[in-house]
Length: 476
Ligand code: ADP
Image (tube, rainbow, N blue to C red; front, side, top):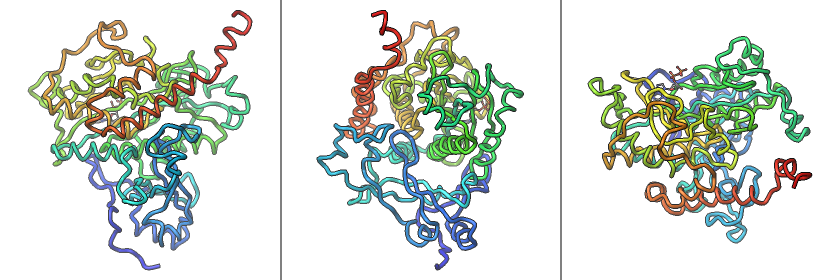
């Protein structure tokens, strides 16, 4: 095949990170063509991102990808209208049996091309999801939703830099064995709290080292992995980047962690709360705005804590709309089990200076790295939706010049301030009534996600759980 020397449209290597050069695992299209010609790469994973933040797509023979499929491929439009079980959920306007479940276009974004060294001979590309007929982005596609908010911010002269820390639990047994056991007697990989614990995490190195090195080889700027505050709990940190790159990386990291754990015969979960007697898993979102020229716009050396007026308005917007955006930070019934007092997961909407009991925490005070960490999100969040909603809230704070309340001090679990919605039903009500999100995303998009939230509640209400049986079988 002819070598494409001029990169196809949309193909740019990531060179704009303020902290450094592109990572070696990233591939230009020409590099992929060479690797296919030499036989080094024979498979290309082509994946869009669904409402749950999962990679959904096809495995292409690499030759066909570089010849033809790099332009587009197709997938059933139910991919943006299913639940975690891939059920054909009723009640969506955009996709249904009545509308015949047609196709969407998966359009590879060649700027996301990379090696995936933990899968032999394989590269991966993420896709935008387009309408089959108009070739415009599907409005409720998570990646499209984030791109739209990023574009609004860019029109204001800013870029959102974000990091989404990811916590998870590692189990002794494989996914297959855990499922066969009915998810009972689930032994975590270590037996006691492993927060920052080097010896404990040494036992997990078989998996964690493969994850760090695999991701680094895929062009992901891994900062570290560490033990977290419970038996078997870990965290992976990736260097902050622009919101879209951070979201792309987040979904790749989750997929890689599961694939690598699976290959090593272990189970690994990003459920927000896999057991009521263990700590929850979060995905805290660190955020700062930078000018288009690459200057940190949240820093003002002459202001208290080094927080610029822009940063104060951004945080005020996020505090004002925290309950409205909670659905996008906590999308399942299970997500709300994480919000327990005294667990490091927040329950209250307030901000603090480096105080982990509040929903929003100021980090890096009085430095160029001054930023806000939103602590509401669980490790089950969809990073595109979370970032899009947080940006919409922050923009509103800037546009309206909202004033920031005083920082909270003390134990926020006991604070007399608004609560984070305590259930998915409450969060869905807030989402449905959110003028902010309706203005930012459009009514059809908000209604689509309200339906997703309501469906989860309906399913939960329908199913009899083992807790009810154990509690009432004999005693009721
Ligand atoms: P640690 O808690 O291990 O010391 P840091 O507090 O330095 O780590 O960083 C936590 C996360 O915040 C990291 O993923 C990092 O990439 C990210 N981060 C650092 N600076 C910024 C910034 N200016 N904007 C957004 N995220 C940032």
